[in-house]
Length: 355
Image 1 (cartoon, rainbow, N blue to C red):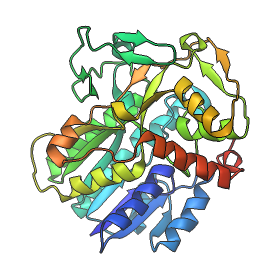
Image 2: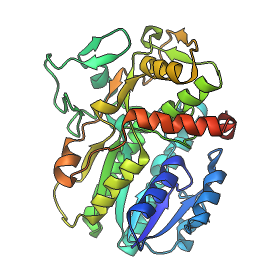
Image 3: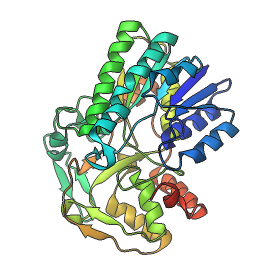
Image 4: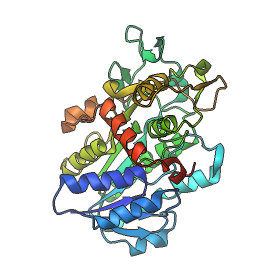
């Protein structure tokens, strides 16, 4: 089987490619990446050592797809993944649109031309910010927790957030591009008869991630804590109680493998996938873990609110478990330990990540 991965030199693309090669024999994997992200050159070398064909190109350019080999499946892992993209930093709103949305037509046309199935990596940030901020939460000393005893809106339960949760705007510029990509992918698949699977992923985390404060927060926090870089709890009264669930990309690769093996052509096409409640952690709890691993380090409280910040997001994996027999296998403690070991072995990792 032949697989094409867009954004293959990013953290998710590289980790998924390596995990799939370990899971399946007879795979031929190729990938395209513009190497724009600092550190991605490191992954290019690693991928070539594994026999993966790499093409330096930009998926915003239709002509760059002309040199790519045919594929049976495309895994679309190319995106600017920062929820603040378009508002802050060095990425404009137009650049965000071009990177995350305008480029999807070239991916879909490739699938159409080669009759290739599409595995689209979407995001938990497609969900309504107002609805997420309105969730009933319990406040403990170090984290927010969903109040299961309160009346909950559609699409959320003790297991987390599912596909039926509100996607009403605003969802952020980033979230809007991912939601629009989902719609176009489903329409292309229906119109031209190729399978489409969409996975709304929680936070991906693991060793080798190019973490920054805006993306890859678990990897960034561990590396910054180890090397005594300044850390801040932003918003929510500077308490660090905001919670996310973390998933290792090799666990996501296992889900993608199961989806590619699935022969049904109808039914549910969108799934939520993440670490789930067992792999959820607040920033304050992450700091406590780092304190235990590396020694104590003070974090600054910054009470200023930022656009798009939300207090609690945990993904519901029930549909993935019911339809594919899938659930994440890497406990968050093991995931954090992998990041810590990598951080200790690579003391310049934040610099390689462009920080």
